[in-house]
Length: 485
Image (cartoon, rainbow, N blue to C red):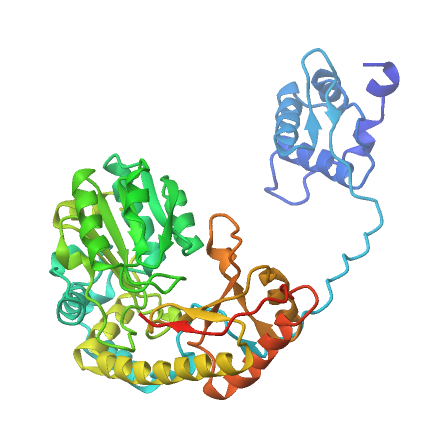
């Protein structure tokens, strides 16, 4: 180091005197003094500090004190050292003027009407009865219920869910095979981790289908293979040509196409699972809502040893509850628990409240009232679309909380969604649920969380959005019809 650098008045620059009796050790005080000088700019970035021996002589301390201080500041990023070169300052204060704030994008038009799928009627949430259930279990819970929750869920709710699924969904299960989870997505992640631990690396999913389920499988480490859906549901022959040994399927009511897996394909899918020594993961997300006849029973009852069953109250009560269930084959339950040791069960009091809500018959009563309300609302939406959007074609079973509106060839669904959003209407493009963009334009219209009085003005905005320049199809139109299989 040059003399001009080693003879700097370091003793004057660095105040290492103790600030109070019993203060910090000398090497800590030296590090603090150097740090302060760097922060306030007295030691500029790139400036060399003296060799440890030279600074120790100037300050009248041991060399160890200096090397300890230098080492601390190197670890903090204020100094940098290279073999054969001086130790230098590697940090500088930010002296540049504050940059102007990034301009916020223009405020979006508030959403007045929401036809996006995915929500039940949140206005109809049974607040009083749910509060009664919470109050009851809070007062009656024994002390050990208030401890750490069982990762698989409280036995009371698992028993209640098993009984409910047997009597209402035709499931073949028992308490030991039921796990409580935070919802269908959480249940799928747990299932995929268990499958991965058992050596299954490939999972098939429906196309189109929920993107969140594809993401959940990827997060769990599985390779995902989209398989097309047609008017009879999942194309099992296409599935058989993939390397998948597990598949996620909406058998009772597929989202978003609204199809029901045909009896022949149900049987073929079970045979496929046996042939490949694999599993079917049944997503039973909104199957309780069927309006033309009783809901179709779950596939799980056809072969409990090959079919997982996922369900939740997100589409029947509210996603805010975060309560769902996972029914696993008995042979896979130990692997399921072992592969998800850190999985967190929903709060115990919420689990007990749901069990009480079901046991008292309030859940069944809520479902009956919801079916009547949703059937009437769906009929109103279909009639209104027929009057105002005659060029569309409605597809899908009379079930669930959404319909599929096919548009004439060439219609710009993305342009329609943008035009509608600008007018205060939320719509969803079917392509949002496809693995690849299609030439068949369609919109997925949810009616669960929109009131009856809002449907006519919402459809009027949809009609205007379809007429916008960016969304206009060719002159060809078709008479609206609906396929309510």
